[in-house]
Amino acid sequence: MEQKKNISRIFIGFAILFLIVILLENLSSFIPGLPQVFQPTSPLFTVLKKAAVYSLVAVSMNLLNGFTGLFSLGQAGFMLLGAYTYAILMVPSDQKEQVYYLFGGCAFNFSLLDMFGGIFGKTGVGGAISMIISCLIALILAGAVAGFFAYLIGIPVLRLKSDYLAIATLGFAEILRAIFQWQKLGKITNGANMIKGFPTFSSFNITNASGATILRLSTFVPFLVSSVCILIIVLLINSSYGRAFKSIRDDEIAAEAMGISLFKHKMLSFVISSFFAGVGGALFAMYVANAQAKAFTSVMTYEILLIVVIGGVGSVSGSVIATFLYVACSEWWLRFLDSEQYIGGFKVPLLRNGFRMVVFSVVIMVIVLFFSQGIMGGNEINIGAFLKKISSKSERKR
Image (tube, rainbow, N blue to C red; front, top):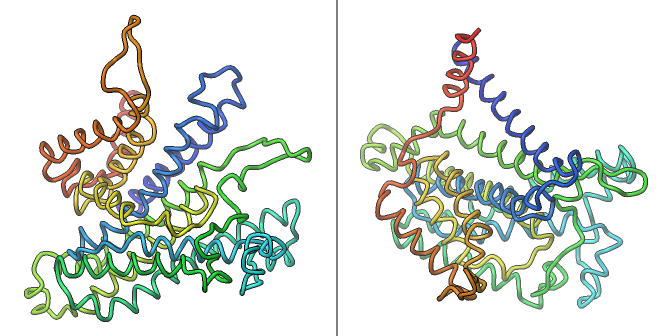
């Protein structure tokens, strides 16, 4: 009974979060004259969208590195696979010739958007339903493609350990990025050029007949998808499979002696982690409104790894908190350090383009030095217990 109450409290917590996000994004429409920070084009919503995407990828990496003890650096490669799968499947057929103009069209003249548009319609409510269904299927297929490639490379590389596994997965990601930019595959990947024209987060905004936006959902969508995926990962971690992952992380010999198949569970963790990284890659393509291989560099993997370390290896809530802090600092709060500033007519020294990254690196070093286990360590935020405490306090006041 208590477990059911905790689950209901968690769902209530997520519902409140989603409601806050929707209200925050549409606040400027309801109350005109608000500060620029509440405008749809402000850095606040850029941070929220990117952090929602990165949090899913960080948690997926933590599942592998933190809960299973496998040091992998191939996250950017699986994100690339997810981004391209989503983009190729979602570009409308009548736009593919324009997108692939350098190669005379795409080898796959097929679009999920057109297929479901033919069933439900391409305008009005039917158009909205077809876009939602096609995007949902494309996201699942993006994860499936990443998971399939993870299974293929996992057969040889998961027999490696520690740094060797990291080098092998990092090499796979770099090779994959080079292959996707190969001009001979241009009819599929568009070579080194970007693929665009597919539905993005802003495509979910509700408009009226004249085309004016009446309800913005472009921030709510990545929050919803990432939250559902992270919740699935949390349920997996708390299942018997999750306990097997943790036992492998703690002591492989003892886990094997207890009858746990090391290779099977390592492969399962690797494929699931890659699946959600692929979904995260598709969300990233929706965030930047294009898919291009050169964006998925090893630096992106290092960013995700840094987020996991800052949040706490083996902590899902730590990864989520660290993601929002990291993205906010890098994309918003420290941006003023990249431009000249004057106080009382005097120019502040050192402030120039690139200085932001110097300060940001120092901040990260301080966090790592004073929080050696990360912000959360191996602990988690219990949403159910938190909401229970709030509800009990309100009942006492009554």
